[in-house]
Length: 222
Image 1 (cartoon, rainbow, N blue to C red):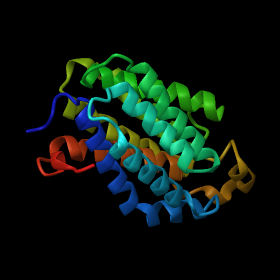
Image 2 (cartoon, rainbow, N blue to C red; image 1 turned 90 degrees about the vertical axis):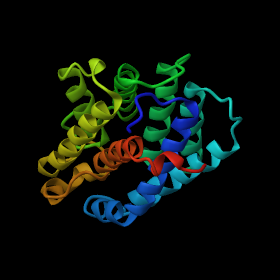
Image 3 (cartoon, rainbow, N blue to C red; image 1 turned 30 degrees about the vertical axis):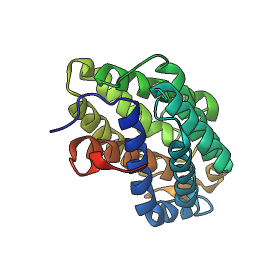
């Protein structure tokens, strides 16, 4: 049976599960990045989530939800370099701030989390939807939940819906020109290749859903 609420302990387990999926998809993400960048996006994401896994394993079992997100963001930021390290680190920390005092993540809190991530990434990266960045996937996920009145749905349904929307949004970036960063100088060369940041975020949300709905995954060890 799928979980309908994620407490602090489960949140840590879910992030570790996501770390494993990011590591599994590293080569794919590197290949996407090679079309418009240095080809190391998958490496950076793996290193960042490995840093999260290590930090979570050091925390007191009583660490609350908001602190887990803040610590995860600090770990990602401290363990990586480049723009995505800053964006992801600050994004996770913003989620902690948004969920301050929250004991469990249910559908309303998950939407709040996505909205905080969208606001953070937009401000940190100085980007907007359509710029061909990770923000496109985040915006797609958050918009889908808002349009579907997600706060009245079960958590597994909400995360599934957001993951599907993020994946579709990530795919759509293959038809976009880069408007920010070094890749903006590549012009039409990026067409046909989904943005690696947007793809990473879609992978993250799908992994979250897989963890929520998998009895085996619920036993993920820190």
